[in-house]
Image (tube, rainbow, N blue to C red; front, side, top):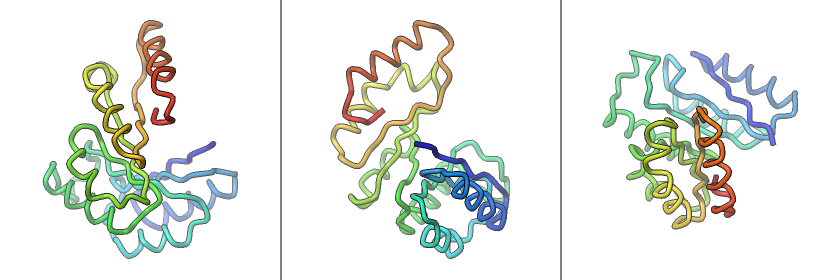
Length: 167
């Protein structure tokens, strides 16, 4: 399975990247909403309905766009609005976005992202797996680079232990 990440400051740029990704055989497309200069929900909804592969909407908490102006409260409102667009997948960061899990329709998949190997991944991995086991629509995604062979072995151990396809 191939997932192409589309990251542009405009919907026009995203649309071009999606087309290239699909033409090259991507099975999924991740649309990084946090890169957009302007979040236009109607245009994003149009992308969702006119793309032939499943779309993942992602809104990272590390902001590159100062005009969007979250921190957490503003970002949470943006995520709620993205959930209403009903993409195939919504990416939520663990643990800051976990209160939104119950806002996601059961037929939409949640990607629960753990973003920092030395921090949250090692500290709260078991808790994230517990959430994934409690909900049929949650997949755990680790966005981190193991630093040592021991770290890599830990990933394999978790993978073997939790074969429910949540990692």
